[in-house]
Image (cartoon, rainbow, N blue to C red; front, side, top):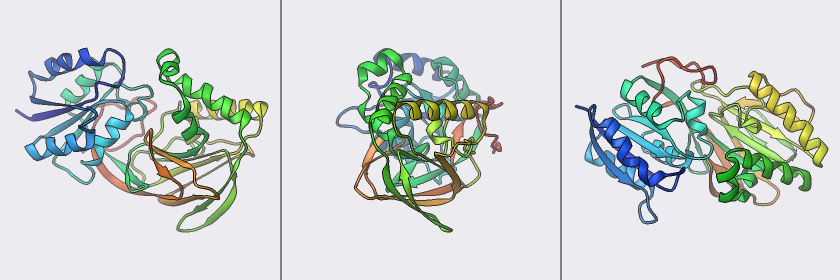
Length: 308
């Protein structure tokens, strides 16, 4: 019987404390199960490292995107342990990008079924990135949205905060460097994405990021005032839901395998939903470096990636 370890974050999602026993009960007929709970003294990275040291075949992250990304960070480049995801946060963008269902029982069923795929990751600001790194509106919306608003409105709370920030803040000066070009401009939001669901429209300027193409999707958006913010947001949402690249003068985008981001003044940087410092920082794609358990038939929002 395969060995499965659960990294469980009781602080992510509602009724979190009651869920671990139910998750273990679902896995117990199929795996030898151990559990590790995140706390103020025990972060998900150290717990994942301890689980690997004890010997496991499957490492399951039960929590939000930050927990999933942290667990994934210890598996990059390994082909002997596979990541399972039970999405229990506010956004659950990693799960949505890969077609993993948000429901607990359905997510556990995906892990039990055992269909494994290999996807890209990246390094960003010195840490592993599965989703995206961002500066500006997106990053500020994450940090300034209250827990109360997230509990009431879910992911829409970030959009409300971003709308307010876009209407009241000015663009900032940004410098981008790739292996082929140097760019200097003004922007309100800069996002470098490895994965992003359609709902994360600020990350999908070039269209849907592909999970295994060795490329990062870079999107720059500049807005000024409420009307511009609303019109740009509507355009980005419409194009993202249609799977099309943005086509608006104040939205620039491109794909690259490496990019360095610098601002005229230090600004907070968010990587996979967690603040990791300030600009400047660099993002580098690490192709096909993470094995993840996903549905056998990806949904329409998941990038087509080969089964291994």
